Image 1: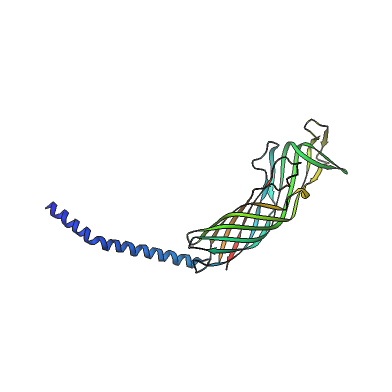
Image 2: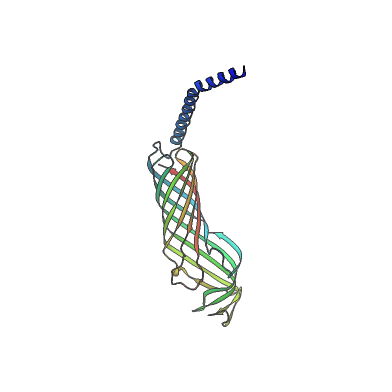
Length: 271
């Protein structure tokens, strides 16, 4: 009796296998069509191989920093980004539902204010009409600001219909750059760590300005994440990680490299 039941179950399984396979195929086709319809619904275009433009506007936060912090910087007392803005346009081209490329042009303003306790910090300060170089120990206040244009060239990948990620290199040109500050609550050892000691009190700080020693060109990597809240509108966050020193190669006053690291949060419109 059991043998007959096994044979019957085997015959039913074999006979229903094509029908089961067909049902699986139809379900996979339905899922694929639903996924394609969802991609078309959310854009950026109804054509999976489409191309178009993205207009972006955002608020810029970040700073210019050594990585990692050198031994000369003993303590960060304050840090506040000089919030700027970014406005630009990206052109995109999709080669499939998920993959594409993007290139853009953006105008930006960015900067920071920071204060730190330093020791044996290489410095060139203005005292009266003279510029004195040496090693400073005390409190350092720095303000930076850069204004310019960025050209990113990134690969585009869509994770689902509403999330898009971009990753690739960028090139920036600074039409305006500023790096200045003051030192106080300490002393400067002229020319070397054991040189003549010059006291610099809080009531009479010494200033410095290295703006003319900054580069005009910066390059690095950009990562951007977009989330669609409407078919043509989305929110985004992007990070520009600079990979070359903000100062020219022959600038030797600051003995370590400083890199721009700025994030932008904003909204975009897809055409």
